[in-house]
Image: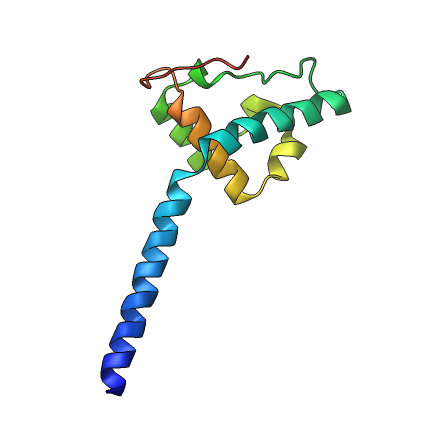
Length: 113
């Protein structure tokens, strides 16, 4: 009996962990768009950039390029290094989901408006 319970608990743990990994991998595009714009507004308010609109539009890179940028966490191109370092992993994942979904080679490329 104890062996069955142990196996079921282990199986539950594995399934829960895998489920969380898949959920985190996707990110939230809508939240990402909002967060991306919020970062630039904060940068503009501090005087670090000259425009409230993001410097880079989602269609500035291909999906593979966005993936490399976020895997290596090379955010120099965005400006405002202080703001980017302050973002949580979840916020970065959401921004990545937004930029990746609307990249130049995606079915729905987009520019920030």
